[in-house]
Length: 110
Image (cartoon, rainbow, N blue to C red):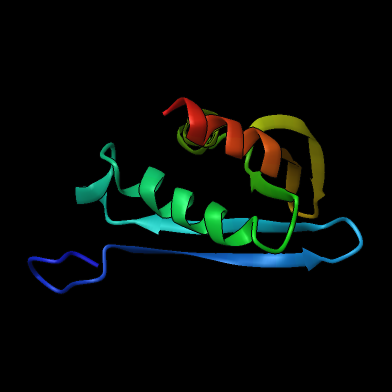
């Protein structure tokens, strides 16, 4: 939400909670182009990660192989590419992961 205008600037959500793996996916993130490149995506993901790690030890991001902007953004917040996930309509998607311990370490360093 843009505090000055009251307009929504984007969205993101949790998906695919897996209790056995202690894992949830964060994805389907969209930001208005006017808010690209700033702190909005990082802050949104940081808040979502803090919330997720109250309940799970792993957070995954599923990113299209052509989506270099999202790959770089997830790497900037500590995501590590750990494999691929098949996709029915094309090439496999990349799987990125952030663990609770790595996330906690990154908070200590900042």
